[in-house]
Length: 555
Image (tube, rainbow, N blue to C red; front, side):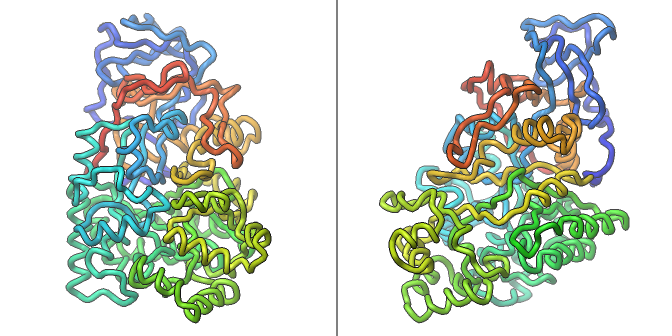
């Protein structure tokens, strides 16, 4: 697989342009092309036919194309569609055909199956466990007809139904372990490891682009390094990549990154680091140490890329902050432990004094944990407040409030965790293998604004206002780099023969509308988005087009 750090080259022969003499379905006239290579922008007319870019005629470069429709794009920039390398829209794509949260940002492809937990491959028992474990991410799934069990059947469902955006999928290692081993914190037997390898192989054969892990989430976190290495060898044999949410983003973060680099080198597997942040007080200003670690591995020949979102707070579920032993056996066992007073006190001690592995080895700071969503409507007054604030209002200790929420909401509460550092965010997004990923959780009354704002926030805040990256560099981070990681030979560039997955935006006004107070506000300055040459956003409004399909792994 080509490293995401390498220069993007023209695609293979199947991307030859359509003959220029033919009338186009659409001509985008007099537009500023930011083509995804990172090179200088240029003015051109772009012709689209049969869902592909048929011609790109630079200003003064020859006869202008004609089309059945002509869009005057003066004052706008044209870029490839944005690729969200870390999305949690696994059910939202099927539940909500509109999906404006992503489409309005210019996202034309999402990578699903993240953090080691998703809905395929499963049997009936595993599906029930997954639905309970990630209710906070995707809802309980009762409003979606989950009529698949394999990865291939899930991708077929996307193709059959049609969706707002294209979707690629990672085999979720935690789900695979749940399927083959269960919720036990123990080494897999030889037979169980063989079954996991088979499930990963089947998922890749059916079109998955790689494998994900959530190594601070149960039961995936119970896997040893050697077990993960064996699974990564399977991934590598199919030309896929490994995308871990590694074992710590707090205390021990650098060691956790180093483990992922080492085991993928041993497995000869490409590595893509999910939401590669350096959070919590122990890591303030330490991003250069992470980048030095990655540069050393890259210079030695490792195939590594990463994604981040352009915000400081993180987002997860409240139950994820518990120590791993408290979640062994699955959600019902966790609830039973929380109900028992003595066991609940042990959990509190681990979280507040020792530093829970679920909270990245750092003692929990309840004033940084804001409730962002609940499943039980009567708990809505907790949303938008930190656990510490709600506890003070109730005249009780924060753990009492947190425990009560976990029990009353049956582990479904989501949180924002205000533990990031702006200098780390900026340093990492400048790196040569950086790509963009929203990590957007669409559930909850007050979700993280990254779900609705990541891509325009990169363009407006970090490129135009702060100049952390040039606009051309930013577009490359969000288009051609992720396309290279996904081994897509006809996406990620404005180039003849490539798919017409395109975004038209105003460089002077593009901005995220979403804020922490109003997180579901749509962005501004993105009037048009096309997938396969069809408008999914036109004049700032969502059309009824469902042009998205499954994007399957190719060798």
